[in-house]
Length: 51
Image 1 (cartoon, rainbow, N blue to C red):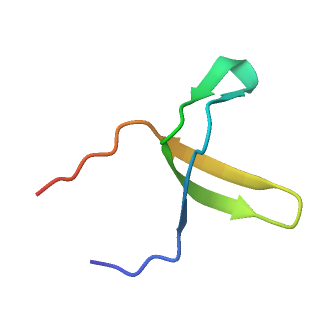
Image 2 (tube, rainbow, N blue to C red):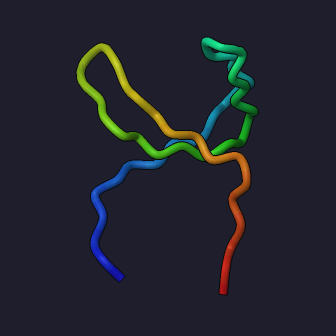
Image 3 (cartoon, rainbow, N blue to C red):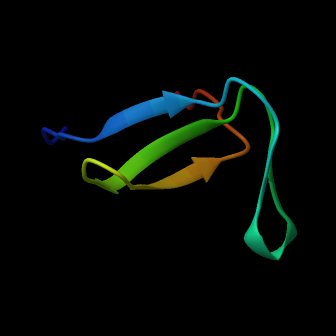
């Protein structure tokens, strides 16, 4: 495995983003970029363990 410095977040409530994109409570997101006033997050709807 490789090391990764990605930060993960969990949606605390349902969110409707521009273009009717829906983020549901509990969805997991990876922070792609952030600064003091803005963050870009890639949310993942289906999060499953793979063995």
